[in-house]
Length: 412
Image (cartoon, rainbow, N blue to C red; front, side, top):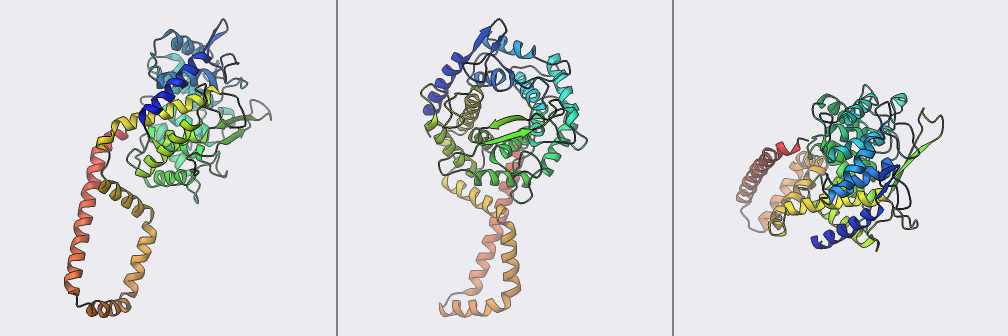
């Protein structure tokens, strides 16, 4: 995938996003689409993140006006509303905290963020699961839990609650598929799994932890032949609306690409991300925007900016690994072999146990076959065992070196 093609796509998306910006007496920012007045989640906070992703100046009049309008939308309880959701969903509140952190504001220098963080903490139960509001504790869901972890991971001094939420997300993982659904017991999907993976990586969970690797394997297995992932939908009820459901949708390919960039050393993730980038560039509209669904011609701000953020993150990874310094074929093969060995450990262990138990029957047959070839059986076995020992030592040293070199980078 040529980086200039991606940069050109981002340039066109930026032009479209700038054209969607509105400065009105009632507020400055973005709506869900070009024909809508500014709103919070799905509009202004997404526009801010998209513009910052393409290196827009945070102190520009556009972004400062949008951010100040967004801060002014805070509810008395410290949370933020979201379009038709006039109450304070944890989802929208976490997204605002994330966007304001991108602007440079955190709980140490902005009272709006401090109050929002306090509100998010109220939405987390004693086991680390988040509900859409503090009144809904007892009905936790994955999206508010993952977004709350993401938002709190960007703040200083919250290690206790971050660890609690991380542990809870691990326990919310579906035991068979190793993916995550919109809540415990729901069918796992790619977007929700990507949300969790991105959040826990930001919270400092190493990429080679077993349950995280299992989640990555699930995500990779859900990629379609064209390089995309299925979109998904989330619906929930809150005590604030007395039986009226709230809904949101998730662009699967955008979420998956963002999560894959958190695993730059995994060749499987590199290859899947390249296919996703090709898919996205091939689906970009002449206007510069992207559609959520092909049958719906509405060009949503939140969908396009999500892709802008993911593509920018992918470009950053590519710049860190320019073409001339990408892994050699041998290194790539070794990494793939290591990944295969980790994923196939139980099968390999079972095979080794089976061979060990039946060796007394296998050995005479094998010795007879080798004797017929007039080979030095003892020498062959000696050399083979010696080679295996040296290979094990080399892999151990390489693995230790990888951990030593990467340990500081796993801190948020």
